[in-house]
Amino acid sequence: MQLWKKNFLVSYLLFLVVICSGLLLLDGYISRDETEQWIEHARNNESSLFYLAAGLKDEEFSRMSMNLESIAGKYAEAGILIRVRINGYCVTDYTPEGLEAKKAVEIRKIQGKDYLIIWEEQTRDNDLIEVDYIENLEELYGQQTRRMWIFCGTALGFALVVGLFLYYTMRRINRPVNQIAHELRTPLTGIRGYAEYIMMGNLPEEDRFYAAQQIVESAKNLQDIMEKLLIMGNVREGSIQTKRIRLEKILCGLKERYPNIETDSEIQFLTGDEALVTCLLENLTANAVSAGQQVRVKIDGNGIRVWNDGETLDVKTVRDLNKGKEIVENRIGKHGYGIQVCREIARAHGWKLRYYSSESEGTTAVCMFGTALF
Amino acid sequence: MADILIVEDDRKIGELIRRTLTMTGHQGFPAFSGREALSVLEKNRVDLILLDIGLPDMDGFALMKQISVEFADIPVICVTARDEVPDRVKGLRGGAEDYIVKPFAMEELLARIQVVLRRAGKEQNLYHIRDVEIDLAGGTVKKSGSPVELTNREYELLKVLLLNKNIALSRERLLELAWGMDYYGDDRTVDVHIRRIRQKLGLERDIKTIFKYGYRLEIM
Image (cartoon, rainbow over the protein chains, first blue to last red):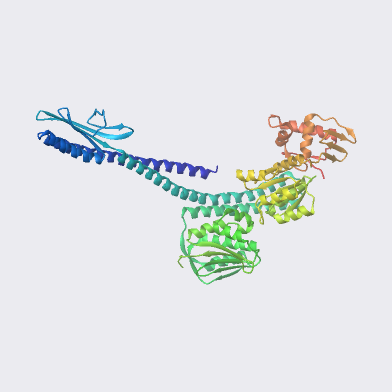
């Protein structure tokens, strides 16, 4: 597995653990608080009931019994079971049979369901009043379970979105490095191979010279790639220094390097990093020169256009090029050299690099300025 | 020796491989694209194909698939910069006999070519150096028609020199190839054995000493 994929998995798992445990802790805290509030509320209800029973105890027994029975009935409809005993005599009892409370407040499972049991016993005017208050906790627990699932779903959804973002970002960072590392192999093969060729073979002077020339060219190629790697490193670190660039100077430089190309600029200045813009123009021109006989570099207020009359790129290649797929650069070989660097430079300036190719109009690389300032 | 098609889009590397193959007695046919490779295959009989995966006009894997259908008896060695395991697996499963990743040592490429040619039964076994005849299949060496007695090591050393003809091999490399990786011998051991081979076969002019490096068997 590639290192960046390992890094991604570790970061993602860490993130998943953090977000899931964070949400579970939050859920636990909310649930505990909610249960405490529920108990508090039940205690208040039970106290009210106790004071009511204490107030009614002096009335006639049948009247007291009827009143308490009516109240307990209403509580029962709401899922709260009441038992009131005065001096051991049961006045009203909606509780399950054989239930004896052991603590003042407890949560107990009865017939597979969780109940909150509050038991209060006090002596008032020599009368022993006992109130058992039993409330079904299924609703509370159901509510808490639902919330826990919502939290889990939210955590997973959030983790999925962040994971995808992280994956594509890490892949985007890694891909150009891969491509450049891949490009390093060819000049390295040339240097090593021709050096071995000189060393191992019994060669005439002419062949030795040819091999040495290839080593020098491969070394230059290697240097070129290294420079691009450094430029891309700077672009990625965000260390671009924008200023007003005089285009004439860059275009003259291009003309000197490639005397057969046509250059034309409708604008005199451009805002951007001079070194990077020069590199972008050089790369696009080098690709065009290697692809076609005639090359035209045109700059106007909308963007940079580098046209060549070379072999037409097929639709798939153009589509892949515009999507930034790495395979394309291998497919178009030398003509695609450094496209990734150009794309990075354009992106760093807020520009967009697009390719167009047709048999009648040739191939054009367009770097659209978008919102750039002139 | 073998006729080898070199499908490589980078002209420098293609030329390097062609020159190295020529130096060792093979004949190299260069092709810079998939279409060119197919055209060479239609016009020439080749014993082996060295195939780069990243071609300008088509994917090397697709070309290999086409080759495996139309020229099924020609073994293919992938020579590419792609070093990812899925690419290697795809190459080998796609019908390649071997897979070499750039940058590679020419000596390694030649060794792998020999192995693939041997496997395909296309390896040269009979060598002639003036009046000396060496039959690698039979393991015999004759000078002017008369058998020459060589020790095992002398024969192994001669075989290594033959298989890497026209290539300079260092003393260390000769020790490694003829004696094996585990042998802790002195460089002088190689010198002694080379002297004996030269004397027994009269190859004083053919086995060249490369100053402070090693030896090279030169055969035209």
